Length: 340
Image (cartoon, rainbow, N blue to C red; front, side, top):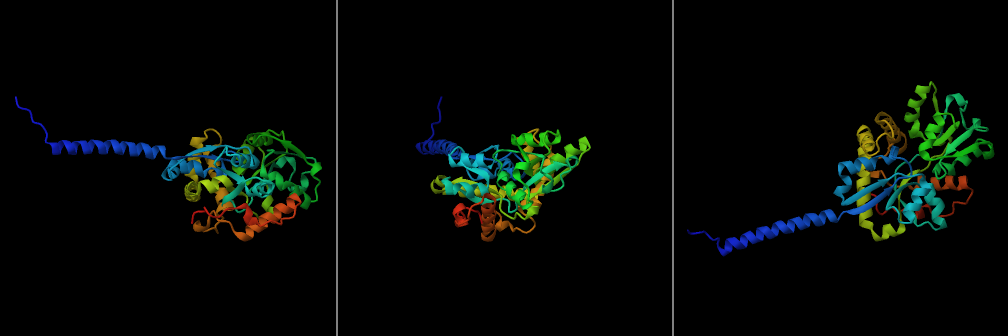
């Protein structure tokens, strides 16, 4: 019986095809392996302006930039800054005031992206406490997280209201415990952010109470607050990664502006049972309308630092912490990587 043997030309072609398949497989494997591992350290719980990266991760924004993103919850701005400074995290959320306070002391960290151009700090209390303004705080207990950036400015608020800080009983607690402590009347007020209101409003309705919010911004504190940070070493050694990371982050923030409900769902899927989706959505709408976009920030400008507001932020911090703001505020930021 005769058998057909392929010609040498056909065999050569088959070998080339097989080799191409193998090389393609290796290329795909290499591409998958080439993703840069990035640890994003939050400075609080997964809520508010900390929500967008969860949506960006689910939507593939970071994958598209060759980034394998891990998001870790935090316990305050100081904790996040320390982790970024020591290399325990690649990038982080932080209050710019913490950068301004610690960089002159040697902390090798800079702000690389502006998130909120209005401070979210607030005292939140219940109507039954009788607290209607900051002047009503003497003799009351106020819960706060030890590393919360709001602690930097609370003394200034009290000074302007002519209140002795010693007359207010400060209670340190974990960030996640503050709202439950407030609603169970273990404290009279809590140092939180304005975006916590929807969560507390719902809890107050169940107990027949009412929530009262005292924003720091109502007392004249116009300043930058939440920013993204990176270490000096990261910025110098991995500039391309920083650009790719910020592109994905900005795309995530834009998605939040247009789809707060969907961002709430993505965040809830990654952090189940932390906060009901309707409350998340309301918090996100607050932060978009009042703190981030505010109806006046053009998309191309989002993330950039305004020189005048940066100087004003530094001046407020100097007054709050009783030091002369004699450094150039530009020393605390790095504008090179902000997406246009």
